[in-house]
Amino acid sequence: MPPPTRPFTGGRLAQLAVALTPRERQFLAELATLHVATTAQLGRLVFGECKPTTTARLGQRHAERLVRFNLIQRYANRSRDRKVGAPGYVLTLTEAGWSLSGADTAARQRQRRSWMPSDAFLAHRLAISELYVRLTEQGRDGGPTLREFQAEPDSWRRYLGLGDEPLVAKPDAVVRLVTGGLELSWFVEIDRGTEGQRHIVDKCEAYRRFELSGVEQQRFGIFPGVIFIVPTDARRQAVQRVIDRQTAAARGLFVVTTEADMLTALASPITSVCTTEYVQLESTNEEGSR
Image 1 (cartoon, rainbow, N blue to C red):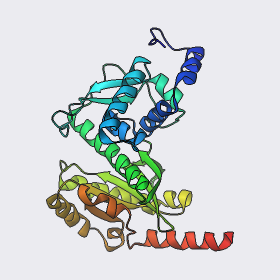
Image 2 (image 1 turned 45 degrees about the horizontal axis):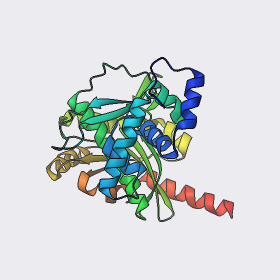
Image 3 (image 1 turned 135 degrees about the horizontal axis):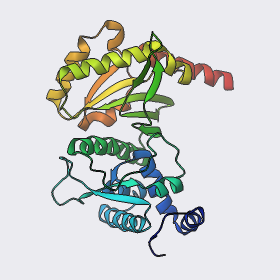
């Protein structure tokens, strides 16, 4: 099928929908979840059963085909974390790609071809995508199962403050994992080590305000733990010092871990009121369903 050369119509979208393979559909669906990802990350998600060299080759082949169909757009990857010799592109969905992905998310919008994301933006977004990929791979290998993942802005929570002013809690991601018969819920903060202490204080206070609003608990029956994922142990200690200065009631919400230990930390329940309430709620539901 030749690449499209004119605006999409419903009929042409329907033709493409029929032409797409199941793997290509998965490619679009994964990109709808992440919004921004590298070809290598999408290859690992869609062809995870293959050898790494095969995964990379198949990911590149499918990306090129979807670019020709104008379902995804490709941009230069200038993020500071890009390894020398790695593919120099990041991928996003076009409007047609969003339509065929079947997703309806807060991030769905028409991307301008002149979009020029900053290095810092790409590094941050690709770190969120990498977390999703690693959690998915962990589940394939028999570890905790990833039940839900939302990347920003799908992960954001809107609510009203004490004076009915509109507020927004902005976690980088929401993660729900199933392990050992329990479901663990997290608000994730990907910390790149570039923000000052005041920024971390503001984050902690914002999550505490959102917890006290009760909105999340009314909707889901639990307030997730908040986990800061940082690049180094020195940064972990710096963020932990900020958390240690929070009120006693707030400190139990937060966990700090390094990128190297993040999978273990995400699979470990924290000792806090919200986690205890969730476990009790699950036990009650299980007893009621017997």
